[in-house]
Image (tube, rainbow, N blue to C red; front, side, top):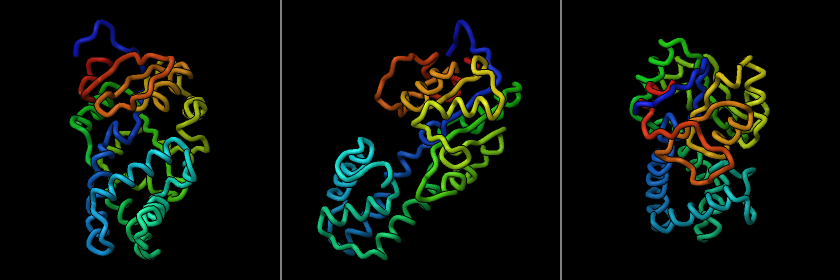
Amino acid sequence: MKVKQKLDVDTVIFDFDNTLVDTRKAIQEAYNEIFSEINQKYGASPERLMIEIRNIEEEVKSNSGNLDRKHFDRTRYFEVLSERLKLNISSQDIKKYADSFYNMIIKKSEPFPNVESVLPALKARGKRLGLVSEGSESRPGYKSRHISHFSFSKYFDFIVVAGETIPEHKTSPLIFAKIIQQYNLNPSRTVVIGDRMDMDIENAMENGMHAILFVGRADPRRGKHKPDFKIDDLNELLDII
C-alpha cells in the first residue's frame, strides 16, 4: 500500500485478539478437540455441539436470555451446553473441559503474518508501542499469561489488560481516556489498530485518537466514525506510520 499522506504519530496501540494473533482459529481448534472428547464419553455429535455452543456465544454477546457477559467463562458455556442437550456432563468434566479450553487457546493461537517483523520495525522508527486487551473477570491473570506467551510482547512499552491493570473495560470509551492520562499520551499523535469497530475504532476516535481497522477479521458493526485507514495485512502499517 502506498499512501499520499502518512499518519504523523508517536504512539501505536494494538489490540491483541484477532489483530495480532488469530484467536478465532484457536477457539475453533480447541472446541474441535473438546467436542471430540465429549462425543466419545457422552455421545453428542461434534456438529450438534458446535451449533449449540455458537448459539450460546451469540446469547452472551447480545446479553439475551439468561446469559450475559458475567457468564463469559467457558465453564458456564459447558454447563449450559450440557443442560440444553441433556448430556449430564459431570461437574468434574465441565471444569476439565473449561480449563483445557483456556490452555489450548494459549498454545494454539498463532501470530498473524508479519507481526514479528512489523513490531520491531516500528520500534526502530522510534515509535512507542502499546497493547490493550480485555481481561477475564473469572480468570484473573489469564490474558497476561496469553500475551506473555509470545516473544513479540517484549516490544511493547506498555501493556493494558482491561478490567485488571486498569478498572475500565474495552466496552467503555473511558478506557482510552484512562490510557491517555496514565501514559501521558497526545491523542492526536496516537493511533489505535484493531479489528472491532465498536471497541477499537469508535472508542479511540471518540478520544481524539487516530484509528486503523484491521479488516481481515473485522467485526461487522459500524459506527459514526470512519477509520483513518483499513488494512488487510499488518505489513501495510509500514507505509502508513
